[in-house]
Length: 363
Image (cartoon, rainbow, N blue to C red):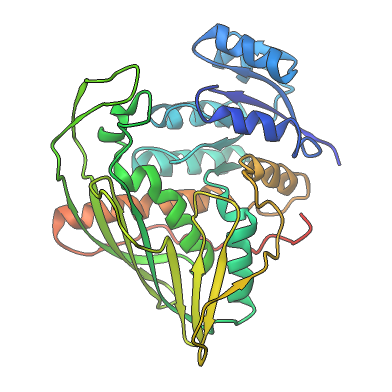
């Protein structure tokens, strides 16, 4: 098949694994041409390290290159919307790191503009396409736990200021545990159970100020502007009900990542921030959990899989799985939980959402 010519915008912390995989594992579907970054030297170094053809002097220069078909947007969250919107206006498909945008209205405008321009929008996380969660999806589709009726999801830690080199943005608008890690958990839940109809929420800030203990900002104090303990209840269109807890306020916990409860059994889902296992199941009448073999490929860190699957879908004129409809729905769920917490009432989803198709085992 013809490879889709792509360029990366933003070569920061997350870019390394994308560059590695797109130039090796997924090079049969994507031809990574070059990159652009606010720091020109960083772009030049990246081009040299990964054997790319071109370091673009600016985003505009990349967008003006008619040979580039797909933009991989790895900029900071506050820049996601504008870079994506500019790419769409230039007639490029675009795949963006999570979240799709910061604001809900940005998401709506972006998806509407892409539809009008006839280009695709896709976005992270693509971990749900990995071996672990795809195995879980196949088990559910094959009826191993009956009909899903409920789920729980937990992401608890004490924040990122002890290890991240520049953690302040995690405590500012667009940050917090739900917007940081929620996309992994919510994308997995929508993939496994389907779209969400309504949500409720409760939030709190336990520590109004954080002190960075990592280098190079050790000792810097950060004012917390967003909720750092967020609890949501999700009512799915299927009738299933889920609880999600994301927190930067918890020192330690003994909690599962995700569990799905069905009419005929329960399913233990692996960490949605990874691509592999383990996957465990306990069916009605059994007393012990059983480990299940992985049915799909990509158990290793396969970031870039969503880009490759999107390129393949465009080439074959089918829907892509890590789609704008999915990432936009997840963004609205996160906002909805916060809106519900602030208003003290349930939030009704506006986006219909979409449950992606199971990935072929041989993709």
